[in-house]
Image 1 (cartoon, rainbow, N blue to C red):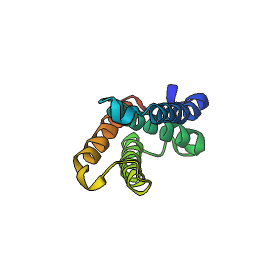
Image 2: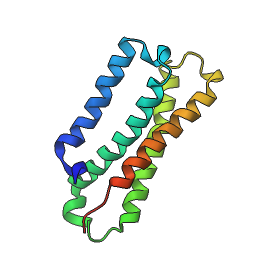
Image 3: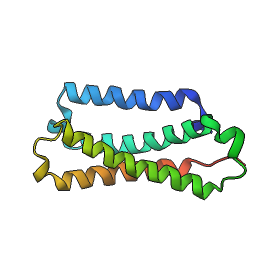
Image 4: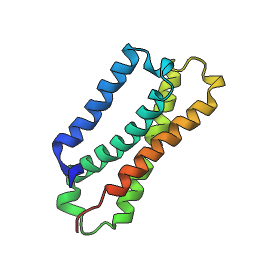
Length: 130
């Protein structure tokens, strides 16, 4: 499967980093309406792919692939996505990446929903091999 390839596991975070730096350098997060939404959807999807790949290469392939139910694997990936998106929003507030966080609760919620949508789409394609 595509998410089991080491190049994908390493490449997904690299692509997100490059797009983030590009968007930050050109101020696309504030000037282009959908760049922030695009980044959160893409980030959620890439996060699920990366977590699945790390789990696969971290031992799931060798030790537990036949003992762990696929639904439990997907639930773990979904929990990782939810916790990571919440952590990212806290990171944005701590490092002042949002102009006025007290007035942007709606933006924070929409950012997390976008990440969850991207993760749900990617999660649909993650299928542990039996």
